[in-house]
Length: 175
Image (cartoon, rainbow, N blue to C red; front, side):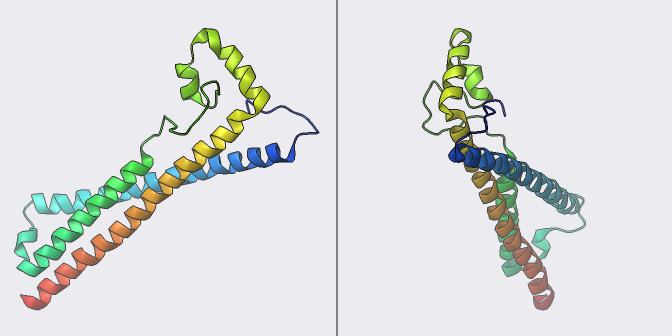
């Protein structure tokens, strides 16, 4: 850790914060991986369905009217799921929390800090342990947003599958 001082008498709160920060970073990597894989898989499935429709082998308009409504509802749900996953994998480069301007906690802080003030702000951040607390909060927020996107996507895909498959089944019985 860049801001961690090696000290045998380190405060237990600081150790806990560092542990939570490390676990949050690991969870962030896991959430990113899950969202990326789900986005790739669903994009592939959407591409296959779109290819079938564009090739003229099958069209949603071939379904009876009530089945078409279910199909298009499922298509909208699938689109919502893809957007939710895209939101989950979208990089977050700005932390919107209330951080003192003197805290240097991540690369964005370094980028906006004038060079002549950077060394002083780094010293102040290390002295106050502000970066660990700030990063713990910021990463936890990002992980929470990513998992929310994944949850919304999974529910949307469940609705999509139910509606699309249900519309085909309904069409078979009514036609």
